[in-house]
Figure (cartoon, rainbow, N blue to C red):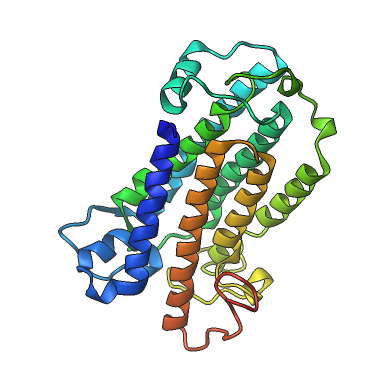
Length: 298
């Protein structure tokens, strides 16, 4: 395992252990442990001297920085793949340090570039959502650790793609050609599914706005319509899982990317469960037929 894989493996393992404790043994845990883990609508009320917290509205910072990172990422990929520019030695040095010098490109250039385009699309969408659509409660907080990990995540996705990308790692002749026209049918299907999931991410923010788009409430309401007929958190968490699954299929032979996907999957599933349980606890009229993870089943 390289350093990048170890970092995301540790993050995932920590989240699994921590979320298991919260889900199964929370009444027996010290409150500050719950406060570190929970944020937003399912945060522990009151103040804690042990937890360093920041406004949840700082989620916006993730995407401001991520947009800059992804513009540089796409610019670098485009110059290397289309203009024939050599990979800058500084980039190779960073990748060698974080991912090892014996890296091998297992995906084709078209897979890498296609995945990069999809991820960039999602980052720009989330940037727009956090700036124009999402409404963050004035009192809503999150632990500083969530803030740090959020920044680490998007940089990690870029590094995971690059560290096993053709030209950025040892590249066989079969992976040196770039032809987006000959993309496989399965990759094209993945793109369509990704775009379908990408489309369903506006409802929650609009619950706090009137018809003119003005914020009229900082409170929470039960979302209705669209995928909410079947699941508690489809526009954000469920759609995010679907989109990352599609990127994973396109980057199927990229080992480092699987560590990113596993991290995203565990993180989103836990958020889905906490949100589902919170809605059931807070709203007596919460639809009984609405499930957490799998429509009609669970």
